[in-house]
Length: 59
Image (cartoon, rainbow, N blue to C red; front, side):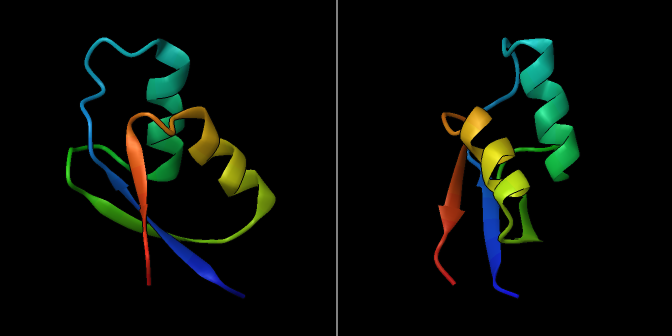
């Protein structure tokens, strides 16, 4: 299955609790950290919730 790389580009400071928990669920704990996940609708939904804090890196 295809994968996507997600990078946290903005700080979680000042973000609501639910967005912080979403970043934790994605495995993003520090800025500039990159994680790789399978490209599923559930992962896309998590990314969309915090789209202002992350970017998707082209493979």
